[in-house]
Length: 261
Length: 335
Image (cartoon, rainbow over all chains, first blue to last red; front, top):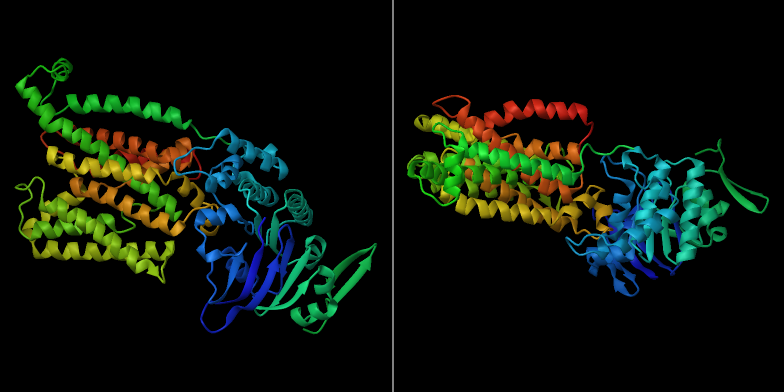
């Protein structure tokens, strides 16, 4: 349970153009917070500033009032778990081996995992619905299974914040929906906050409590999905015609396929 | 569901049994034979002066040295391959081996007689040359406080090429030293005595053991740097410390034995193929497997051709390459 305060954060890769430009926002404990915007709008840069991986040239990020730059690697890992975009790696570990690495921040060097650590990992795999794949080699997982394994690893860390960096990119629609549903249900049940970068506006609409819309590094809009995902805002940011279709109480966002770009 | 060929503990037991056999073989076989009975009476404390001299002055220190050099090179290779996520990494790639060779060459051409000094200028220059090369590579690769794996490996290759060029220069300028330089670079334990063992062995054992402390960090770093940071690993610090430890281990090994190729690169792969990539078992198993392999190779090098020793590096490649290729075909991927 941690509150994230992003205070007037600016970050530049080349000291000329700011990839993140004077962004301020607060993410409440337990919130499912989405970051959206076009390619190159600064979503990932902002997330890396929040995680402390990048040190902003201006402003600061506070976690429960403490500057994230002052955190040690272990403190980072106990506070924030990270699920990145799916990228399978070639090494012959089992699913359980990888999930157990989530206990690392809680272990001393050379200390081996206890029964309790195994139990925590087991529970996490159960919640991420991959317990059946526990002894499978990670090289044999599908994209959807891989992301669930990484979700289980993140749960095993027992951190108050989970950072999701395009977690469903490259997954089919069924796995996109089931991954985000699982992540949101778990954040509700276990009261951790989620900061999630998404490209799919419909998924953002469906699962996020609040959304930040970025464009050229600047925060264009901040609020509930209904407040942020309006036709005017999306058309001006993405530069393409947008249809909002409401049906059976749900909203669907579609591009105007033949609009002048 | 694919499991590895052997459980790590079983591989450990097999290698240890092989190790005992290899030690006995190394003690007994040679240009002048020592009988098993003589060996046991020696170990029982009874003195037979000829056998005693051969055993205590020659074969025992040489065997200990081969074991620890093989172990240190293999651990160094395992750690470097793990931290760079690069199956080609070993002490060559970060410049240590060629830096050590350059150091040794400088010492030889400065006029120290190799046969005259059993432990001295050549060993010390080689050790310092190896470390100097590593520090040069590390600092070349460090840009804005961060060291990328990519630039580190490229800098290592550049420094290796530079060292080789300088060695060739020195060889041409000092033609009379050419043979000893070439022999040194091919690796040999023929000059090993207790002086080398008493200094080299503790350095190699300590640095290898310290590498083991980072085993779980290495497992986690395979998942990528940013992921590792969120799993509590200070990747920059771990990489720097491991680079120093692996370099000290391999520089110490090279400085007492010359360049013995193949061991550091291949033994970790053999262990991975046999019993899996977990560094907590990979590092100690690489140490004992590399040690036993090099001991056997050295015993062969001493005895294969009568009246002459072959460079041990030649044996490691001749015997090891076919076995490694067989395993590579049989056990699909590594790292």
